[in-house]
Image 1 (cartoon, rainbow, N blue to C red):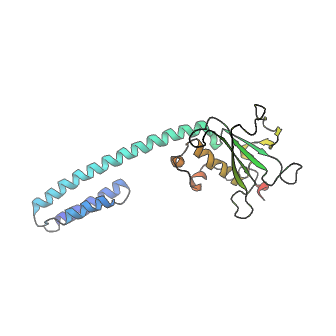
Image 2: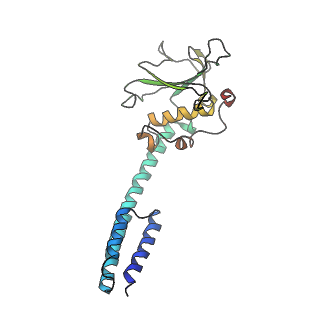
Image 3: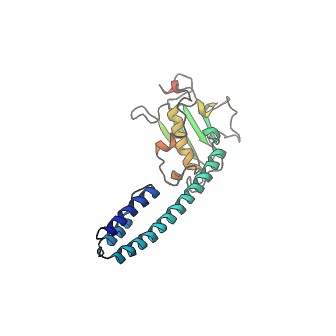
Length: 227
C-alpha cells in the first residue's frame, strides 16, 4: 500500500512524458516531489494524489495542444509566405551582379553584389535599402569578403530602373541568383529570410546557418568562381 501513490506518480510521469514528447519541466518536477512527500500509507491519499495528477495531466495536455496549434498555424502561415517570396527556394526580390573579378577590366575582388529589392524597408533597416558586396568565399576566415551596405536609393537603379537579366551596370552583369557560388547564396538567403520574416527565427538578429541551409541547394551555382 505504501508504494501505491509513488507507483501511480511514476506511471503518470512516464505517460505524460511520452505524450508530450519531452521531459517534465522543473515546475512539474516540483509538483511530483510535493505529492511524493505526502503520507503514502493512506489509500485515500493515494486516490487524492491520483485525482490531482489527473487534473495536472489534463492541464499539461491542454497547454501542449494549444502550443502545437499555434506552431502549426505559424508554420502554415510561414510556408505560404515563403511560397510567395521565394518560390522553389529562390529569393524573388533580389538582383544579383558579377563584375568578373580582378581578371576583368573594371572588376574587383568583391565581384558579386546582391541588391535586395521590394518593400522590406521598416524598423529592420531604418528605411534604407540594403545590399551585399562579396567574393566567392564570404565565410572564409582569411580570404573571405562579405560586406553589407545601405543606401536611400537602390544602388543599381540610379536612373530609375535596374538592368535586365544579362545586361550591365556599374555593378557588373546581372546574373541569376542560382549562378552565385553556394556560400554567396547562403549569405544572401540568411539576410533574405530575416528581412521578410520567412522563418520563426527571423525575429532574432541572427538566424542559425543550419536553418539557412535548408533552403540553399547543394548543386546549384557557379562554385568555380569560389576558387
